[in-house]
Length: 216
Image (cartoon, rainbow, N blue to C red; front, side, top):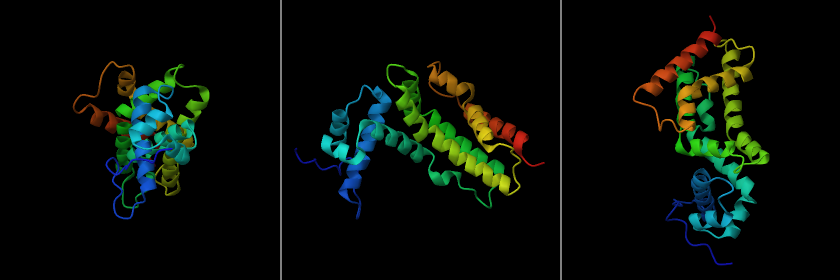
């Protein structure tokens, strides 16, 4: 097996960063691009290895199999755009301000080119089987739902929100956020929002949510 070429041109190692972490990052970057562009079935581990500048053996040593790499690429994409700390309750922040920030981050994630492409793959019977859809759901939407539910639970505990079922409320919030604009983009009717459309949509969604669950 030939040695891996130097990956530092793609992912700088930086002071003290081991090369294996740089290779792992390069593999994930390649996987996110290729899976998003060509789907799960259309991408081989050889292609990902070549794009990352590493050997196929290195890809398998880091991720085990293609399904695990797909799952980690979805989780990483969500983490990049909605990091775990994004949902942390800020003691000095208003509930509306925090909800508005979460709404903006979530909407930016779901209408990104990567997310739109991946969601279309999940809807295509020829590209994704049931197991792959479960992997996608756990790595992306379920993680986001659970983190936001924890945020809402903290708001309830502090007396800022009155929510009988935080799981239902979290689902309602994200469904409202996607709205018609997301559906139009998924269908290819439009490539993106017009100026000011997103801000009005996010403000209206947060206001509606608070009318339902803010403590009076």
